Length: 308
Ligand SMILES: [Zn+2]
Image 1: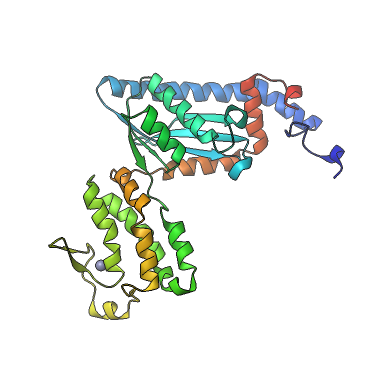
Image 2 (image 1 turned 45 degrees about the vertical axis):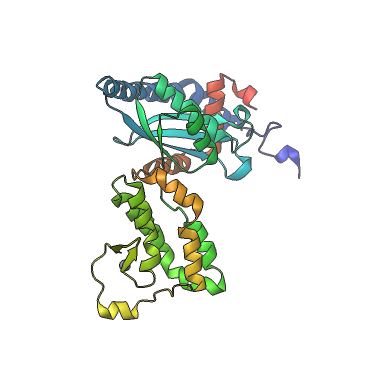
């Protein structure tokens, strides 16, 4: 490869043409300061509202999520954002460079801790924090913020495991039930009313329903599915799983996964980060990697030449 044609400099940042250089100059000196001031002003307003909530004895529930400029271990930048669960406003957002962490995946933990500390230092009374199940975030909350209630987003949980199991020839009957399983977890979290035991019972009830059993006994007590009665015709035609079959056993392994059952404890409040993921997706759509680099250069107070 002819390196003289490479669009990237020695440090890996883009080498800009004269026209791009002018755009960068204009952006750094005129455009970004205006955007940053508007952003800072709005953030101050949002935080002051949450401070007033805290002064009145109220709490704020937040969702946190990270989005990197590229997947896996090659990301250079990660944006970590917090959303107010009640208003769906982004109340904290920060860009982390890989040099600030020990590795690309470690940027998420850096962004989470930094953003949360800023919220708490600003006087926001954070009660519930909802994230994905990243081990690094769980450890931080457990060790450094034991008073916070940590919740996990149930979306997509176990769907990957079930999909992988259903790919095996002997488990193919499981395939039509995967979407139902994901919906069932969502429904169980939404209907458990904060009751951990109730959530586990609702979740594991799917092992009866998929066999066409809608009333069953457990510990001497009778339970039944929450859906309306299924007509005889549908009961006959539906492709139920056979209890003890390979497909049912595969589903059972997913449903009774000990890590999942443990994590259900952190899903009783039915919190999710879907809106935050939409925000990050929109941001990536309109923010090229080069603009992320430009943002970093601006914050570091570097000149265009230094960036190159
Ligand atoms: Zn049922």
